[in-house]
Length: 558
Picture 1 (cartoon, one colour):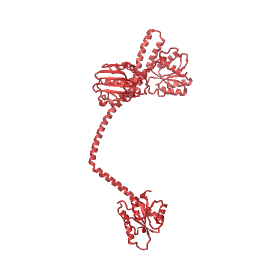
Picture 2: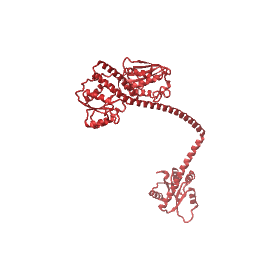
Picture 3: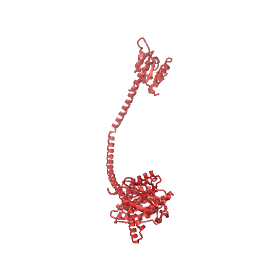
Picture 4: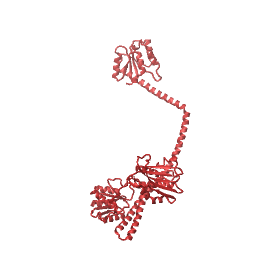
């Protein structure tokens, strides 16, 4: 029960109070019976919607507290009373009129009265009281607003000064943000340029790898079929050149890679040695390139291509920090002191050190942030060091930087040590001509490049395989529909149906068909579904590699 919605009853004669209470209850009104005028005053202080009083209950009673409460009501309040009076033939007495005057807002009902009349009077009184409550709330809201306005006016000058100062700070921040946004926009444009270059590089490398596959494959055929020493010598020279071209293409592809790292045991010394030619071409003749390799060869768990890209990025940064020439030193080491952020243990370390301009101390905490660069506008994307940091983290290690302004910079990549891999005797010798001649397996070769397809077909036939060939995915599906082969070799990038789409369609027709995917692209998208394509061969490849892969499939199926 809400006290402000209740009805107070003051009826001291006989059973008037219980009867009125029962009558009100039938009409769903809550009421409280008061035992005296003083009790009524106390309940009014607590709260009520109206009060029903019998006239005789006030006759001769001490009404002092009641009169005081009525007189001291707040401005919004004019409490409604319902007075049940006794019917008289003449005028009311002076005392009865005085009671009505002191109560103020009074509805007089002469008894006997009907229950509907009483209910109507109660509803009218409660409606009046609700309006008074609404007025109270509006007055309170107005008073609160007035107080707030007074308070605001009181400190208006102080607020104006504060707002002016705040506006000045906001304006300064806005100008800084505009400058930062322009710098970030410039970096983004440069990054988009590099991304476009990477995509172009990937496409060119794919076509170049197809050409290298044809060249190296036919040279391999010459080496296998010729007995002329001079021809063999020239073929080997050409093969060495294609190997170097394949390595160069592989390094170019590193710029367009976005795949997950393929961690494997890697010799840091061999990685640094193998990058000598690439680094010499990249940093130019004005930089003195030096290497200091660990006597105890550090083997680490890393992705060779990504780590090579990280070292190349660091070398380019070092070159840019030495515009007038200098010394670039690449070191490998076994670190026993564990850097912060790594678990205790031994780590392989590769360091790229220069004696260039260095980096101010207050900027060292920002250099690994994406798009942050200390180079002049348009000279760098701000992604090189962040990529180095990400590669190190993904490999389970960390990247650190040390620099003294005007005295050079050293960036170290720490990677977990591992054991050198055991030599796989099964791949120690080239695959002989008759290794699989007794298998008589049927292989479907799908490649849109005629030169690559012809090399693969002739090589497989030389090793005794039965070969079907198709120049497109549609042609391949027609051949599988006519005759299901034992294996399928499919190129990843083809017009019309891609290699993945061909593999999906082939598996739908022959779920147990083993598939070898050959590709001249980076890994992105090639190994998206390892359950579909378990064997991936990179172009350019040797026939020995292909035969070994098919042999592994045969062995797994045995």
